[in-house]
Image 1 (cartoon, one colour):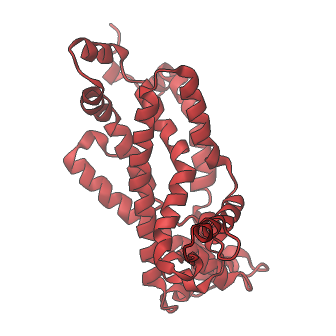
Image 2 (image 1 turned 135 degrees about the vertical axis):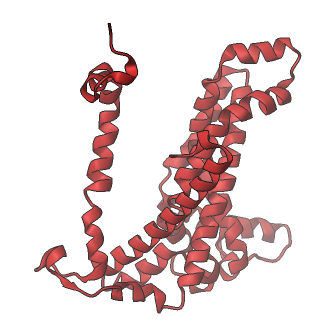
Length: 310
């Protein structure tokens, strides 16, 4: 008699599922090389690193490297700005990406659909240096496009680079413009994977477009949305340095609402870079992100176990 599947040995299971395992092998190697092998480098955050003695030979100083953030007086505001920006980026970004993916799916013309996808996808490939230059040329007080229009209409010039209150909205708009097309690809692919017979059956039963979206497409996208949200939450304490630095630069007037952990650390260490300080900041971000992911995953598991990461 043949052994039942549950009675197979480990190596028999490996042989049986060798194709799937080989497909997973590149991802396993990637994460092992770039996520697990560097883990001993965490020790840098607890030593006074010097090149001569190396990581494990440098003097152990405990949590002294973390005082850089704790004693700066900016830790709360930096963490708050970083988390709130990322929270808005994640929530609005995913909502808009789902919306765009559904709109693309509803387009009937294949040519127009491809052109629309390309146009939406292009901003993602624009360098953030160029994005910063574009924003400056639009909002510059003296020669900016926006102020040129306002002057031609007989209105007063706008001074956004002197008003920190408007920048949270501007940063969110800029981020969504650049990232929405790219983020919508995953959701569009998920929609393409929905059983076509189910959609045809809904049409035969008289369901209109809104009803098909509400009762078929959105429930089918729910697992993808939850998983991507959980993954995104892991980096909620890690800000988009390229976006913020290239758009805001070193304008101290805007720091109260635009300064994030990465930009603050860069300014504080660019004249005297210190591996230990940078590692301490990275470890702080990773620990906070880990706690958030574990907490949210626990809540999701209690509500809907099938949608949790583990």
